[in-house]
Amino acid sequence: MNQQDQNQDQQQDSVIQMALQDYKEGLGQFLQKMPDIAGKYNEFTEACFKEGKLTKKEKQLMALGISVFAQDEYCIIYHTKGCLDEGCSEEEILEALGVTAAFGGGAAMSQAVTLVQEAISELSNSDDQQQQKH
Image 1 (tube, rainbow, N blue to C red):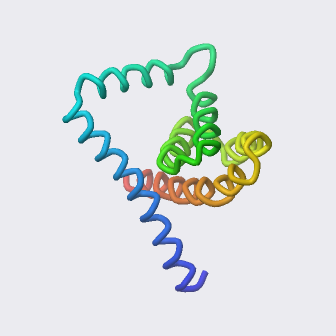
Image 2 (cartoon, rainbow, N blue to C red; image 1 turned 135 degrees about the horizontal axis):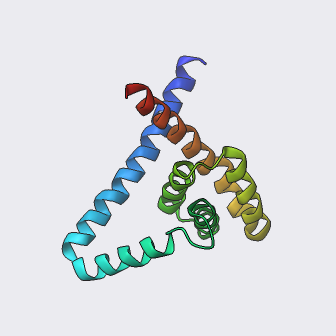
């Protein structure tokens, strides 16, 4: 890999990490300003993502597909991370996104082949680096 490719990868890495950080900060600010609403929303989403008849892994794959269909970049990154955290392989993620693209057409496919794959690459490398530090 040449220097230009490495610089582009580092820039993309920072975009993904910055988006996750922006979301966490925004959620924290909203929680401070609207604790009742944010608290109830958090309780609701936590209940939705608990293990049930569907596994947490299956729920993250569903959420990622919906995020891609809705073109919600913050949720795409967040749920790509959720999929990886729940042990999804890249192949499982891409298969789920194939279903999303079959339903959502070109817009869903464009997110699947760009943002999701970039997030998988960065977040997988980030997890590997953190494991090596411990």
